[in-house]
Image 1 (cartoon, rainbow, N blue to C red):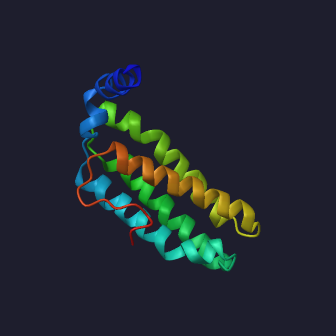
Image 2: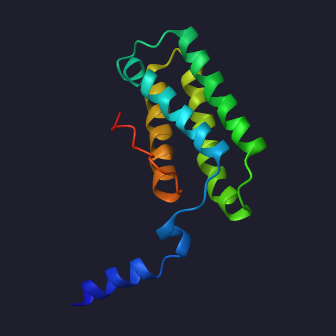
Length: 136
């Protein structure tokens, strides 16, 4: 019985945005969808340690440009921007690590961090039709 109350307390003590999700705008949805597509396109090459340096750099540039565009042009409210900022930081840092090339273990670690950030985005933001990376 006590465990039931604990679950009840955990679910209903969360702020409203945690249940409904932070709002998104077209800029954010387009940017995050593009980042997701880039991760899917490069995932196998990274995990199989076959990502050519030129492709790694291109991936990092494309993801970095998407993050910059989101940061500079989104019209999200302040609380949504605050929740988004650490995710964008992780995505950008991870993309740079992947783009650095050379160290495939570091690239895989960065890929997993980037994927986790995308999963967190999908759980915390109201992005219609968002799918996890595994659902290609």
